[in-house]
Length: 318
Ligand code: CP
Image 1 (spheres, rainbow, N blue to C red):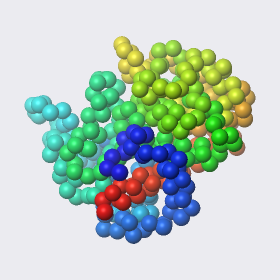
Image 2 (tube, rainbow, N blue to C red; image 1 turned 135 degrees about the horizontal axis):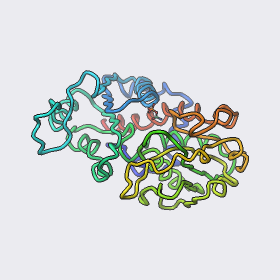
Image 3 (cartoon, protein in one colour; image 1 turned 90 degrees about the vertical axis):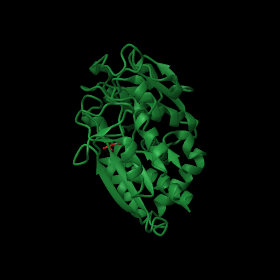
């Protein structure tokens, strides 16, 4: 595997989950695979889970790990070609990327959407430049339009907990005080449809996601109707995708917060969220603390999804 930015990069999902569950049984079975190999993790944005789980995954495989926080101690990087660099950005990505590639064997990149220029975000300009110019296998640690390591961990978690072959999975928008990217919801819907689940997305009007990601999912503007009979409820906020409101907050309606009354509409559903989560905006305390909450197991599975991806990349280096 030379790149991992979207669901198609992982191939057969059943095989990928089976491989992940094998790794989970013995995560130190491949400690020789990464010997003398180096993972460089580059963060343009903050992280708790991705940073720790991906580093742990690489260490499980015997790798050395370097972490660069671009906004803390590195030169500020220009990302656009043709810019006259007379501002505060001292280095261009076009030099920085091959230099970084020369120090490592595999690169992980986190680069969120700016939410100002939809074309720039949806062309994935930063991650695509790493793929083009680094000369190394590159995986996304959440980019502008997707978070595949999270969705892979979510899929593993659902496979571990589902009680029917084809569960009803409902992703619901929920309110948040800040404008958030569409990366997690885009990926989640795309991966769950690819897994063959019965997928419904519910959100207020105006929050329609890019159809490229939601193809195959039902869209329902009535949250209560969508939640009826759900086996898994995945809560997430995102800002508007559709023009002319790209990146804007259109609603802060707290009636969309997932509470025990909403969960009572479901088939005793499990509650999921990628974290970090704003309690009592996205989900109430009692729901996230309930026995049906999977937020900790899904975060723990981030180590497993990352290890599966890095293992495949190491195998492709041979
Ligand atoms: N879910 C997730 O990616 O968490 P972090 O932003 O903390 O890495």
